[in-house]
Length: 385
Image 1 (tube, rainbow, N blue to C red):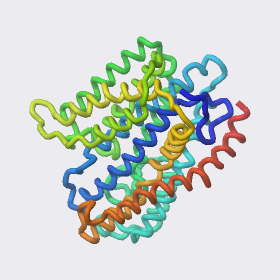
Image 2: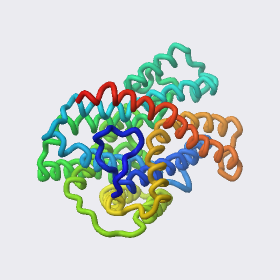
Image 3: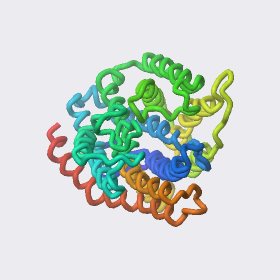
Image 4: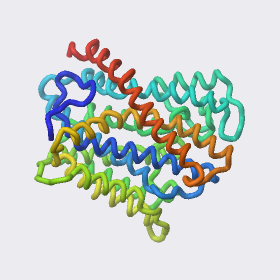
């Protein structure tokens, strides 16, 4: 772990695990790649996503990283001077500016797309404005609500991936209210119980998707599946942070990055009897491989200025990229459907433009909006702690 601070951190922020920041960036880049391939399957009428079949597991990796980092950053502060109010202020300042920006960009792209649902129904401007207002205050839509402007049943129809940040907020609230008070033994018991719950969800394909990609809608079992999907890796990450002892490892960043890429590109595994085989693979990733990657990443060090800069850049853009890329995907999906194009071979120039455009837009949002806003809010609200 090198002693550097990530972008716009608070003055008393602890040194960062640079490799973990970098890995979060790698996972975010892979998510964007996954969503491009999701577009091909969506345009073709919901066929299986190919190439980066398991890219949705990046969300589960984000949750375990988040639990580890929050446990490391805050566990020992509660006994000193950290209050509930102080913790919530810090987390809101860290997360919320980009949530607002993602909703605004989502609103703009929705109008560029013609202001219609996926089935072609025109949406009233007032409904879009209501969706924007509620998204800014992070109030999710229920399926069929007037402000579910795309008609997909998404919690946040202007910016779909905000669903995972919604659960991240719930995790932060539960951590502040009671999880941080748990002893190591009590936390371990909680992790085991949550792990059993998530295993049941994945192995018996409770929602019928053939995959663990739950949580994006408030429909039926999705909310509880999303809760388990967040809480198990989130608390597991905290348990690891409490008991973690670094060990010597060389090339940790590259090892972890390649493993993530390989895992995400494993083909979808069919078979549902007696258990969902794809669910078995998912649980092996979440229970075994992701915790190992976190330990590897937290043990490794950047060895030169260049690799330090790369990890810092990836860490800095990871959250903005995740928070704002999907509105561009909606435009891409609409373009694919309109032109009846279903492969990367046919569309690679546009796919590359969307991919790298997302990265550039995320960087601009980081430098021109997120960092200045967080610095201002940090000075105004946190320095008085």
